[in-house]
Length: 236
Image 1: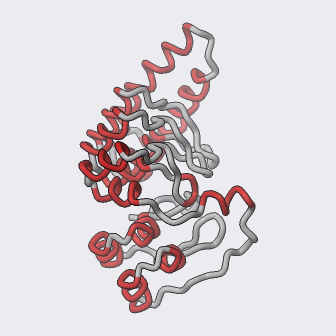
Image 2: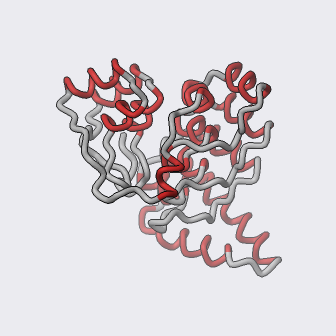
């Protein structure tokens, strides 16, 4: 259930970060790598300790997790991104739309970011919370926001197989042609994670995007064409 190693965080790290005990247990049972590290060398246990998630720390230690020191000193930009998880992030991950709405009404920034540049919309898209996704979009969540590794809400939804959320994001204007820092697109993430229905959905949206871009002479045409050719050999 892990995403590619070069993503900022794995689902296990995210569950540890927000204190989602049930999700973490399920991930451990499914064989999630407890020793995987993010871009600056942090593990799921590091995230749990950062957030003082005592029960999560206990579960990870029982699974023989380790807390690795960052392999490289974090840059100033990294330190600014790695701050205590807000209630907004927790509510988005858990699909507590009422809590999200209350927090937004109280002045919480809908586009605030957690570790690695992940937004509440990304958390909601990642964990499959359609109602929360709609609520965040209605309040101005940046639909094409990117993490420090270049991942977008669409990529999170595509990689984790949430077709309804993929469609909602496409309807809201999510760009299919956007590439992460590793060169992957949402289509490629869906293909690599075994979601052919989402691949087809994104391919159709990508063709429309490319057509619209061609009318304006936009470089997205080349990106879309390249993406389609790169996944052609694995066409479902």
